Image (cartoon, rainbow, N blue to C red; front, top):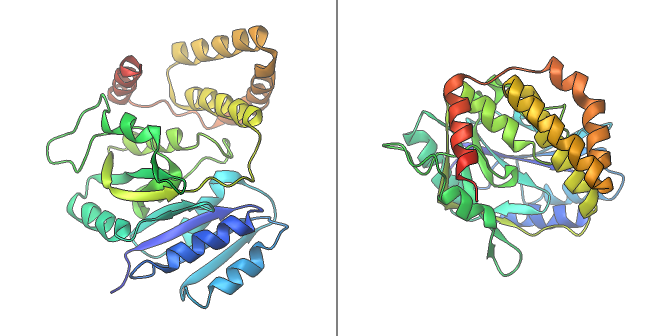
Length: 292
């Protein structure tokens, strides 16, 4: 058997977690090609990858000279030759049957660009809260689709059609990391692609203890949500988002870094502004009305 899917992993200074991820991926049958994009790690990452080559024949490493965040996945996709790409973080991996099932679904549904998988968290395999939100998507399930239509997903639990991903330019270099999925989802949908949640495709996530503190991560999430609005939504929505962020920074000093970082990134965001089509904006508004 030959895999139609390449697994792309981006990593930075998480050698221990990466070793576990590569071990779990080596148990898949067939073992897929794997591309590890090393975002300028200074720990034992290179040795971990070298050691894994004995059990993963098609293992490629791309080493970057600086940490380019989530957008470094784009280099891994460019290095792949398979029609499908399964993303992993350095602390996540795919279930034994996930990739063959994803390939079958994508083969049978040529209008679908991305599958959002069901994510099980930690040793207890807890249901990630996002699973239920995706399963109950207000967008519903289109006739003949493999699952509910979605405009959100976890990157570490997604399988994409490589041609569609590359056509829209992949993950944004403006956003760097945290919440980068939303912009990619909009860009795929704007080109007419479907994105679906397929609960039978399963990914495991064992969050690494090596991560940014909660406050910094939350500010980055706020920044990137706002920048995504700036890059793709109509002017009134952009104005509302920026005003809301300014008021939040005044009310809650801990949100001030998110505002300052957003202002710093605004020129780049405006340079990449491409407003979504009207029909997609209506779907976004439908989603927003459906949020609890």
